[in-house]
Structures are given as structure tokens and as C-alpha cells.
Length: 98
Image 1: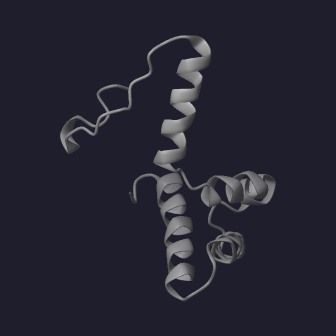
Image 2: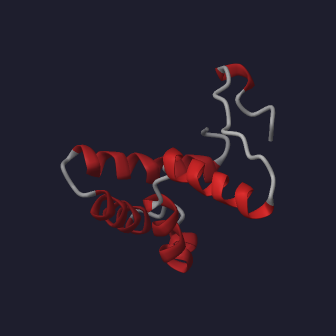
């Protein structure tokens, strides 16, 4: 990770969010505090300053498998196709379908 500054900086941002949550901040407050900290300490400063709202939204997003299943089933019914629920796969093959 030290060879890639972007990955290192992003990892720092995520680590700061996790630290805030560990310190009993709400998820949203932890994200705001992490973004502010990274800007103040020159981690992705320009990017976070320009795209702060997008980054906040991305980090605040919580994917819900049950909601996704309902959406897939509804889309399948609307389109007339038979949508199947995705099956869990083993750790080694989890990204083969991409």
C-alpha cells in the first residue's frame, strides 16, 4: 500500500471513519470528522475538497441484501424474466462473475 499513495490515503480515510465509530460517533458524524481530518492532514486534500459530498454519500451508503433481492425480483416480474437470487460463492471465486 505504501507504493500507491491513493490507496494509502483512501485507507487512512476509511480507518479514520472506523476510529470515529469505535469512539461512539454516529456513522455520519464519523464520516464528516474523517473527511475533515484527512483534508487538514493533506490526505486526498484536493479530491476531498472538490468531491466532499460524493465521498460522504459513498461512505454513508449501506447496502441491504434483502432490499436488493426484492428489487431484483420486482425487476424480473416487470421485465417478464425469471430472476434468481444470487448464490453465495466461496471466497476464492467470489469475483469470477464480474
